Image 1 (tube, rainbow, N blue to C red):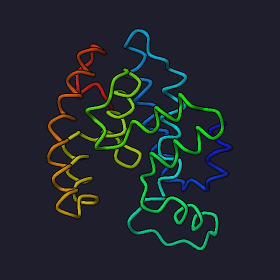
Image 2: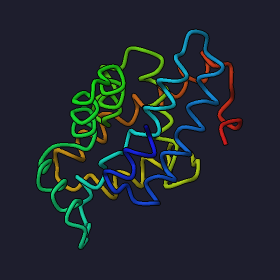
Image 3: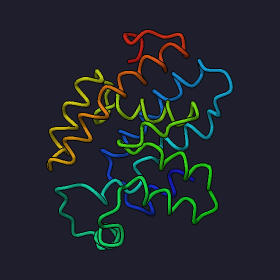
Length: 179
């Protein structure tokens, strides 16, 4: 399923590598928390950026399918677009989980799957695990262009560090062990 969707939606190799690493971190954490649906979490991690190209700020392509996707979902986040695609294929639980990883959505996270996916995505820069501070700093630099975007970034940032503590405490892991 994952490979087919990656092919269908022309997911760039760098985005695939990011998703693979997010899935690895999700599994590392999720295996340590009882009751986590590891299959659902892994699929969501692999598909969370399925149509990330929809909201790349700078993205040039000759690929007509990608141009169509960017036009179709313009003004909507990649999380919402991917959720719509997945829900349309009968994958409602997966769609809801993918949709939950939106940066500003942190206050709405309820399940461990949502929290782990959100957190793992914030720890993976490209295809490598970095400190939360490094990832958030780079993300703000890249994405917080407007005054409103900077305000949201500043508001969410301390909540992400609180989530990190919660996830690590529940999983019984130390930050240095997330590699």
